[in-house]
Length: 463
Ligand code: ADP
Ligand code: MG
Image 1 (cartoon, rainbow, N blue to C red):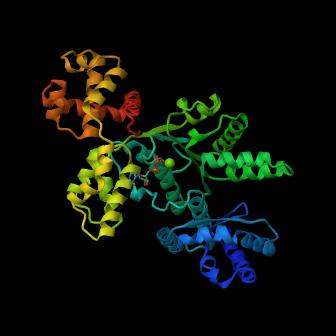
Image 2: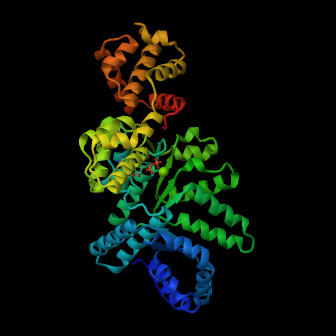
Image 3: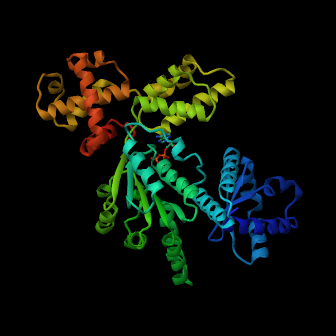
């Protein structure tokens, strides 16, 4: 175990002894197996495999436990409990791996501390690694750059700014960088933060009176004394001058020391209204990469990857059915996968196409978007008419609007090119060509990606 976690384990052992004076034995099974996995700022993070433990402890034993911490250490130690039996197993495996990899104690402890701190800040997401990230046209570039950053932190791309819609893998990719560095550069200090929590912590620190200078300096140290800072969801930054100022200085301190910074956001820096200009220009200094919704093949690959990871039999036709009906983000795709596999396992039946269809029927109906709607929104967006789209006109704007409509129809409805062609009154090879053209251009053309994003938003497709 890492040094900080080690300290937590030691304290916890004594606290458990102390608790025996106040806690009835019937509650031991909830409290005694709690396992410290993180320790920072006088806050211990515990892991439990028993989901009831959290409620029971919060309701009946919170004060007893904090009192016992005070009695043992003289400090006001707070604690958090994370439930997950499966993740608890994974965490054990991961720490064993580090144990095997590093013989020297100090290196090992550093790696363990990094892991514990990142995991407790991220509420345990051990699967967010490069090995579990499926690469497709939609994320090829972002993946490649993230991997470079992980392999050579602080060298090439700094800062790395990853943007993309919700559920497309930003957090996954960012933490993959973290996990890679933890195991390959154990001496580096890594910190992962959710912007919202960082802002809350900052505000709390400023609000508390008393020894505020000392407290602020501790807070700053925490974020400026690292080799790699991962800032998730920067769009949640507050417009408060003070917050900006703080992030700005943290950024500059790290940047000037040549430390790696990675930022994620659901949009480009220029589209985050709360950012000050100078912070925005800092974020644009390095490299900006984006994540797009996965195409059909990548969606199928993601489902297959999930199936093999979860050791679930999911036949090809089921994967394809799901991939066709759930298009826009990976989180949703995973949700659907989990639903089908959970229902099948509860009912004790194998997953077949029929089964998947009957399980997912309601979701499928709910989300149906028609070619008419897509054509209408595309026409409006590019300021042309549906009649133009159906015409043989080839002006640049009309062609583009038509091609985007074809692309979106194929991606979201899975309609055949023949049927799409019937709607636009064109031959099906033309439709195929339009689809492929947009698909290719989306890879390199940021402007087009923004167009497609906005159109999807208008169609209420999640982006
Ligand atoms: P975001 O942070 O962009 O909202 P997440 O990183 O939380 O999205 O991703 C949502 C879910 O989808 C996560 O469970 C993640 O593991 C999964 N996911 C996203 N992209 C991929 C991918 N390319 N391969 C495998 N899983 C992915
Ligand atoms: Mg995220």
